[in-house]
Amino acid sequence: MANHDPISDMLTRIRNASEKRHEKTKVPASRMSLSIAKVLQSEGFIAEINEEGEGFRKQLILGLKYTGKHRSPIIRSMQRVSRPGLRIYKNTRGLPKVLGGLGIAIISTSNGVMSDRDARKQGVGGEVLCYVC
Image 1: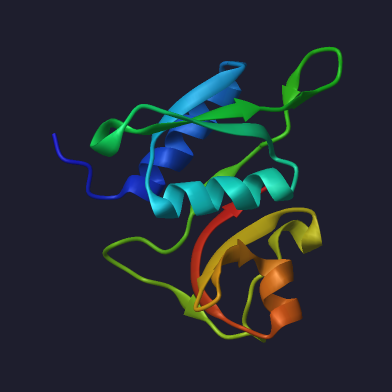
Image 2: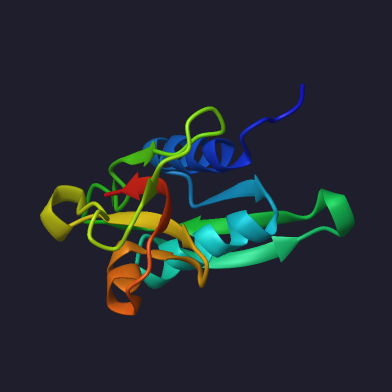
């Protein structure tokens, strides 16, 4: 079956793997998924990013992070905002703050994919892809 929303698929795979306490998860590679993974890594939500395979079979292997003795996941919630049927765009002043600044919103801007904090610093708006906290 064709995947019509690869970003949502990526977020679901990460969410499911972290709930099951997996060390790593695989997601189909694309430029967008790699950009989102880099933002998650720079914000401290995932540990590592590796690539596997060649051509259209390339996959990203994401190392997930946990905290504490009981290994509770760092990623508690991932929510897709803009979707293929309803795109959500915000300007600089309209960028959301997730959990009062404790979480991040991942924004696709003309300067690339970045967190809401970076977008505010650069003074750019864009498409709100997802919330992570």
